[in-house]
Picture 1 (spheres, rainbow, N blue to C red):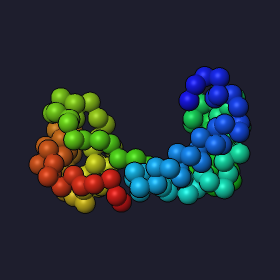
Picture 2 (picture 1 turned 90 degrees about the vertical axis):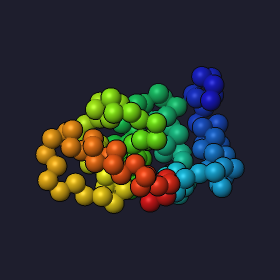
Picture 3 (picture 1 turned 180 degrees about the vertical axis):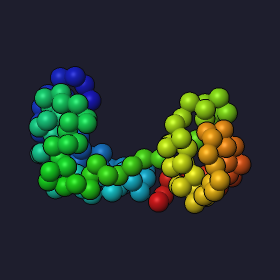
Picture 4 (picture 1 turned 180 degrees about the horizontal axis):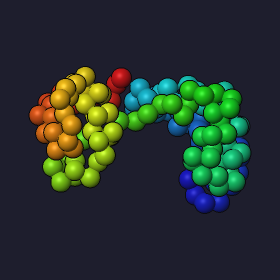
Length: 130
């Protein structure tokens, strides 16, 4: 969106509606879920967005009316990551990658062990569906 249209609530609401309606076949399961939750409260989302509110504060405000929106998490993309890129991730993120793949790392204590397990299970990296 252009900077000028980011300040107008009706245009923001229309853009949200268009994104969710027109890209119906192209959206991932998580994006469809977010569209499902945002659709009834477009106006509540558009107003703070038009004021330039940061995303985390907007999420806290929306959380009062519908707590499920902010709980939708997107997975860490691991397709083109090398070992040095994986070493920049936190252990919690590495654990979530393994959890998304359905793999447990029993006995893993060190970060290097988690990185090795992520690399060993690269073939299990599935689609964006959950």
